[in-house]
Image 1 (cartoon, rainbow, N blue to C red):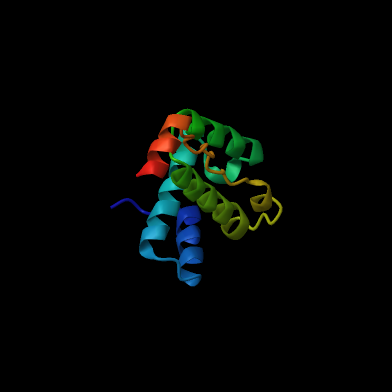
Image 2: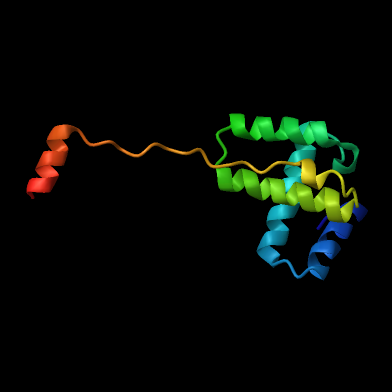
Amino acid sequence: MAELSPLRRRMIEDMTIRNLSPATQRSYVHAVAKFSRHFGRSPDRLGLEDVRAFQVHLVSTGISWPALNQTVCALRFFYGVTLGHAEIPERIVYARSPRTLPVVLSAAEVVHFLEA
């Protein structure tokens, strides 16, 4: 098993101190690792514009909104807690689920429904 980097170890310790579940910890570590691999650099060397570019990339891949927001949570935790950059997490935006319009019934369908 490969030795953990000091940064990853610190993030895991921060999550453990805050009693995050093992599944959440795995998800957060995976999300930050994916972010780092996308740019080919250590995540502590990436900034807010890189986070934004990564979010745009994820949206273009068709990622689900809940999965995108889980990545946002991981990056907010990493920058805010592990790196201690209080100003960055509040600027990393959550995605809103797209709203769908309700199905509108035709006049004939309404009549049929009311007669039933």
